[in-house]
Image 1 (cartoon, rainbow, N blue to C red):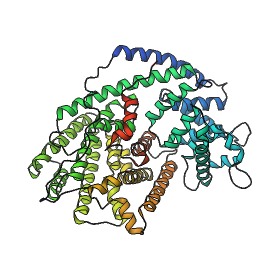
Image 2: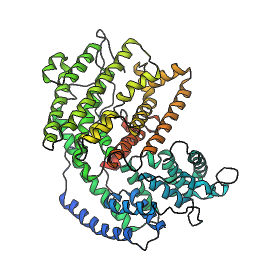
Image 3: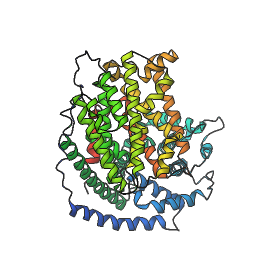
Image 4: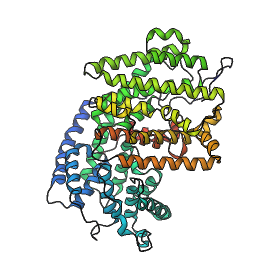
Length: 547
């Protein structure tokens, strides 16, 4: 957080310009193409529904179909049918000791059930271990089984040693086999090792799987492949339309000319919003959430790279009072930002009031006020040269990581979220606390080098090193263990019966996944999107599939 004393000459933030320019400004939604897609999709839906609901179909075949539908990104068309089938099969208490259930089948079933909040015991994998307590050597030749077990192991909870062992075993085996594999299996293995499915960005995981599925000449279903491509393109058209809308909003604000120190990352903000919920029914929510995230990014950069102590104090006070009359407290460059923030939330308030949901905006504004207060605490740490104990750092940093605010904002724009959901968030349930921990610590590791170059001393890694007397590498390793623990906490709490709707749990899980993808391999994908996010954005918002 490179702040400046009042006497210091300030430099504009040294951030690269937007990669996308005005690329999405002039998109025109083609209703004829959209209608064509829709008609073809409806025909294919009937065909799939018949397969899915066929009472004569074997459990193994139906579970494999469900897995393919989910990985192709088209399962949302069959939510009720899939829910019914999974609950039906889960209630059967299947004997997985039976030899008919091989490693791949058991792993897929385990993963699917847990993904839907139905928790099979991990002891079903015991049959794949030998008397020595290790996974059998014979499994090393079962590449598909190993890949399935590897993906399933990422849904492990606390004290599931068998899945901890499975992850180590499968990772070692897959890495050693990789040089000798051929595509599409090689592509699947390399992608999984880089980005496990459970930790991945659902929309991009669908894109990747469609590409792999198309290469699989032996097991692909041509109608499912066509269905997936049509649906992907149809949803992509909607996403482009939304990007066009937010791009015009951003252009008309013209606020970057007044805040040249900030990162111009509108499309990347939309990437975050799509990560929270990408399905067509959330269209309005994505547009609203993108605007919220973009303004939060401007606030973040104001605190991180430009504002003086006095200016940031003034901005913090003005946000707490939430009144346009307080604008006179602010320096000239802050006034446009403050005005835009209040105006945007006034729009939200007016819109939600018509639905008797003003409370949703109130909760989000309250979370934003806390966000700004915490930003200011970190700013003062920097100015004083204060390196807090790690626990004190986390107490503030879990808020400045933005995900408590974003969880509220994500629900604010969704009509199904009632007072109950917001009140539940405010109790800081364990799944949300784990999400905040992951997002904070993954960010800390990925941005450590950049933060040090700015002169920041109060980073999480520095706090941990000082408190525990360890070197940087050891601190990072131990912080990564905290992230692993937090993922187990999320997995443990993603289960039926949910304390509130499954949709809320899914949003928390999805926004956690976004940070793991955007900051994968210790890269700050938001600040420098060309390194990480560019190929994902091109795949999701620019290039349709050829059909």
